Length: 151
Image (tube, rainbow, N blue to C red; front, side, top):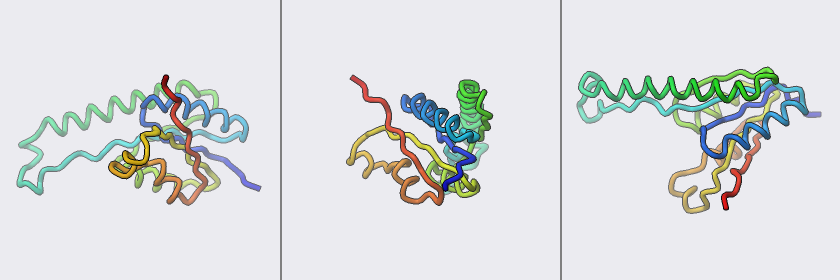
């Protein structure tokens, strides 16, 4: 029997996020599981390879700090939508796929839920697909929730 104590929900705050959170919340209710909402922030860019320092590009550091604040607020807003379920949140930093996989590996008896934007095969080949990578590489069960179709 599979015991599911934790459901990790990776949110990117896109159009797919609402359906993703709704599906994960329904599963958490059904299994009596805790929701852990995560969002991945890309690392701060570095121009050291080009011989520049942070002092020469202070706006980049400011932008990164502002991005963290905005992401934190957006994550808190999403947590508020499912607060009755015992929800936790965490901002992760790094490559989206790697950060999600590392976070998922630290969770036993869990499930990782990601959204799919449905960009198609060519976009997946050119830019990759976090959802596909999670399904292929996660050490715990993974579920992909498709984005709602637009008409």
